[in-house]
Image 1 (cartoon, rainbow, N blue to C red):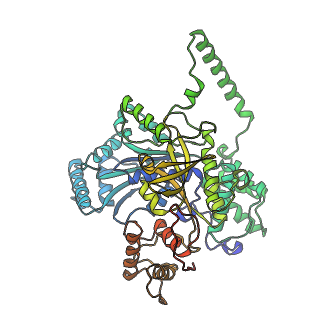
Image 2 (image 1 turned 90 degrees about the horizontal axis):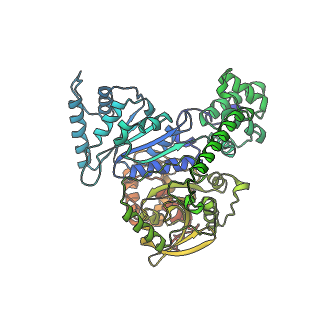
Image 3 (image 1 turned 120 degrees about the vertical axis):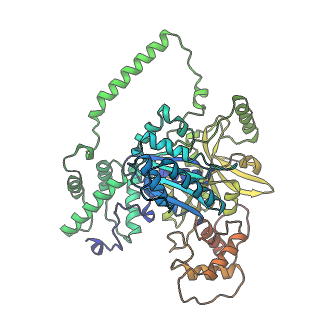
Length: 562
């Protein structure tokens, strides 16, 4: 109704899980990286939890845009199912034919197992995604675990991604579900957006919808944060109603009174929409202090020796304030002796954060170093979220998880997530590769380490910056139409030293698919013919010839126009 009035191409605050509108906050990037790591692992369960409306489904759909073509997906939205209903739904999603009226669990399981074996033989990966998984009963969750028992000597034939509310974590912690919980290879919990992220989130959605106007003032962003508590879905419905009210009154900018009225219309008199009161925190604070006092008295009475401060700080389970719910879990356990040997090896390899600097500041320092590689000065206090700032500088953030080879192929400086000898997470920047050695910047230190030492930490979560073509929006698959097809065709012609031609259509046809596959092979990418971010990075970098590289390779001299 108000789109034409504000100059939008489409409604900016729809609650549909459109990946184009996904604002990649620090948490959302980490959530996506965990999903990518889990997807690229050899099977098992991947868990993504978060409060209602924090963006779990949208992050998952963003994952689906990046998966290989040879992936069979079963996506279950209605999770209030019996065991028989779940198995029948899985068959429906994978298009497995079963006898009409069948209610035998064995028949369903046998059919699903036969399908998984056939899919594996044909090179397909089968993935089951269940939304609202907190509604699954213990019996259904146990049946899911049994389905993942089918495996080869290298990997499981069915991977399960569970999306759910916080209750799902509590359910999986029950003793009767410990076998399933032990099979979770990656897990992450999404929280609410911060005050700064709310403003960046709103600006991002307005820009995607085609707006270049400042429709929300800074004070109104503070009010929106308090009203929505940083929950993306609540931000959407409040902003949508506020824009409607602004349109109705003929104003050019959303005011704080309009936001308040919009929130009242959305929530009514429900207390959930009200901001937290500091006064309401006093009883809880007093209770916490009382309990703390009792514990302190008890410890003094029994003369329990306190842990040494530095040892406590460096324990593997210690979590930095930045983590905000990160729960990466690596499958498998090792004996204490082998763990000790691994820690000694890490110390010798130099994969450590400098002792003189605070490890909790490693992420901020690494982003500053990464931007410096692009000759850009980044100050977190001034510029806010790193990836939102990157967008203002014409760059994109690309998070991923994989082997060192998958990072080397991109030939771009990268922020790496590493673990020191005490199992503590820290961030470093990979800035150069030469003669089998990698240059790592950790805080203010730069050091060379053998590439093999980094490879020992595989899989590695990483993030790179890249310059995307102006009109690149999403993955381009064979048979699709996209406005960038003529540019891609001519760019590959430049790179491959073949004659350019005037292209009259925007169809990604078979002829161009073959050229893309040829380019992918030459760059060490998977030759699947799909033009995703990794392929587009290599095309853009090769044609434009600008930006930092790890290897110092000279780029193609041609200039492309996106």
